[in-house]
Image (tube, rainbow over all chains, first blue to last red; front, side, top):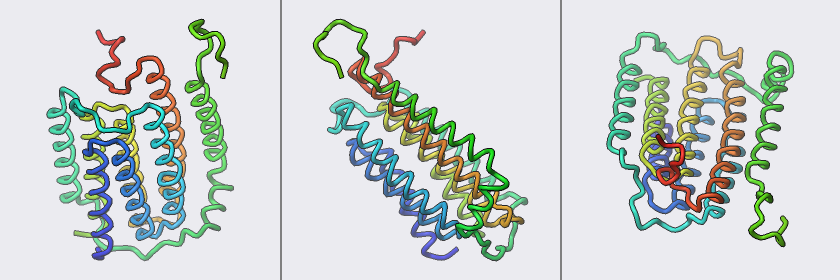
Length: 172
Length: 103
């Protein structure tokens, strides 16, 4: 493992930890963008360039913007006065610590992990496009359908309701 | 420690952080961010096993990550739309104040 890989991993984990622990939601969204950029850098070092740039486009570009818009629309931009934790937060953190302990133990002691590092595979955009258009064309079409349905559903859910008669003059 | 184990440890810790945030924070948007972090941890696992596995030329793990990212995008869009709809009804987005279905 190169030192650059370790540094990228630490930046990613720090971003994730801050995203989950800061009080102000806008700061959380920014820390989340840092964590996603770190994950994209990890992908680039794992020879998955296409996934790395897709990660930047989808997560750092689209989802971070979407979350900031949701924070603004729900007017939760300023830090709350009350507690930001649920009542059962200690149990939740204990369970997640146990999850990490078990996963880490399994990773460090597994005999299924190969010892030698294979040579870097070639995943050029041409290879990925060929695979997507031949072997994986049915999943690609289905994912397109799912995305379309999800986008239409999201718009319908978030539409203003016009059934109540409280303010009949307003139509949007 | 091999490079694969390093990747797996990073993604295990990322998953644990996301899980802790998703169960311990009150705000619905933060729960969604935690879920996104957990999904990214799973994606990192897939890419690590693709890179260090015996047959990386088949591109299966790679393509799986692309589809999983598309699903995560759809999930985030629908989740945020639900949060906005609930905020419009209840004027709150704290999860423990939305308890009409609570038994």
